[in-house]
Structures are given as C-alpha cells and as structure tokens.
Amino acid sequence: VQLQAFGGGLVQPGESLRLSCTASGFTFSRYTMGWFRQAPGKEREFVAAINWNGNTKYYADSVKGRFTISRDNAKNTVYLQMNSLKPEDTAVYCCAAGRPITSTIKLRDFYDYWGQGTEVTVSS
Image 1: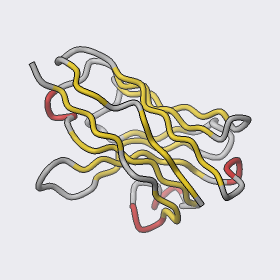
Image 2: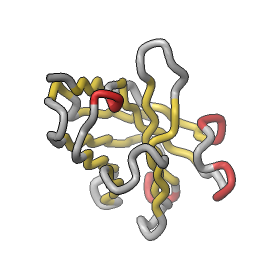
Image 3: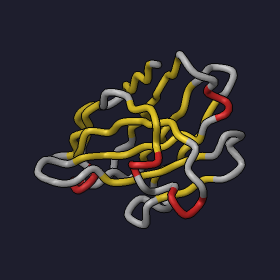
C-alpha cells in the first residue's frame, strides 16, 4: 500500500494550492479518503474527507467554504483544492484511506492507510 501526497509549497495569504494524493496497493474506490494536517507543535487534525463515490464530503469548520475535496477513482487520486489560504493553514498535509462510519470520519484512528505528507507554508 502506498499513498503519495504532493503539491505543497510556499504561498502568500489569500493564494491557492491544489494538493493531490495518488494511491496504490489497495482498491481505492472502496475507501473513504481523508486529508489531515499537522502544524508544528500541534496534534494532527482532520481537514476533509470524501466517501467512496465522491457523493458525500466532510470538512473541518476551519476550512469550510475555502477548501474542496474531490476524487477521481479512475486515477486512484484524491485532491484538496485550497483557496484563500491563511497563515494558520501552515502544516504538513497528508492523505489517508479508511472505512470510517459517519460518526468517526474525522477521527484519525479509523483510517487504515497513511501517506507521507506534503508541506504547505502560508506566509507573506
């Protein structure tokens, strides 16, 4: 199993980035995909998740209206479009695959597979 996230970088406040995560080694289309982030000195936190067919999406309150999660099952890839970035969005972002139920979708313990992260820095 491999999850590889990329697309991070250094941007100024208000700018956008699009993260991608490509998966292999498991049946991607059967899994809920999530994005989590970890800022320096802080716990890893939930950012967004999308169910297996892309019909249901979940977001942390801190990113609602600014971030959009999507997936392409034909490409085994999940995306995170991040707009209106703020300095507090600075973190290492990683993707995860799991089969959580709705009540546990924001909990990292319910994800089975994790990728290495990609670093996002928002600074002027």
